[in-house]
Image 1 (cartoon, one colour):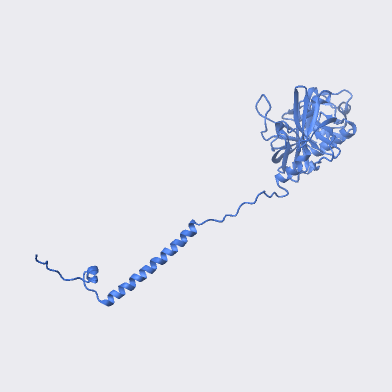
Image 2 (image 1 turned 90 degrees about the vertical axis):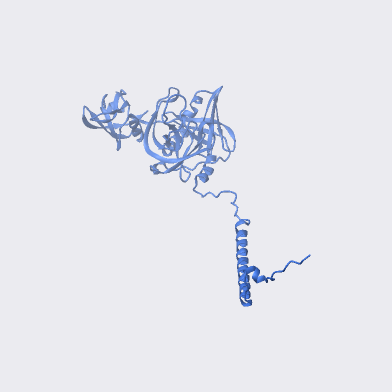
Length: 373
């Protein structure tokens, strides 16, 4: 067998580059290769470290347990005031109701609304209880009520009760922050926040169980007030009592309406004065002018038109007659029948007060010595 002819033997540079390469060029190429390798290694190391930074474990500071509440926060005020606000339960057989009250004295006197306890006033079989925030439930004795301003005072036997701090409703201004605390619909310790919407707002409502109409000069607020808040506390931004929640205005018909941002509270200055009289005497007397009136608004006048005059009363003695329209009592303007009532009650029994009126289109001022209701 013949051997195949062998071709020429190729060196490694010839295989790689297709031709012979000088040794110096080959050495230079080796150096370049080493530099490229080193650079690639450096880049790889950097990317590896970056990956560790991106995918490693994160150390996140955990939130502290328990929220710090500034001394003047709503939560701090509510925590301080709530123990002085009680739920009031009224039970008569199968019937009953719930309202709120405020402890105003260390001897256990609780201020609330007359309409909260009205069914217990003349019914010995009706039970009244005060429920404190710690669950303590004690009987309440009615000390006295004032249906005309919708106020009442109860007495409870509790050792060292928390007493609310009394504020000054006369220092309020529209826009001031207020809080309502009470038991709407029986939900104890409910807190709502709002502002004073208006002051000196004369409001009136039908009396309970045949009692005379309720009329007072109200603090209007948009803090949510609902049935059951009655008798509870309206406090200012310091936690001081400035009003006793009493009335709301609703829309619609049928059933108990809820808050639409029109709530009314009895100013604390008036409420405390009346409560002191109730504690001392069990009843209250108000200044009266001796007329029945209705609101009127006409081209020539705006005020309270006299429907009838009580015979021998203060107005009759001053010469006020049926049909006259009273427009001012003392320094206060009168625009409605309700405002006539609250304007007269701002004065003392026996005080002589100038009364401006319109008779037959002609203005007239008379002096009236106020009597008692």
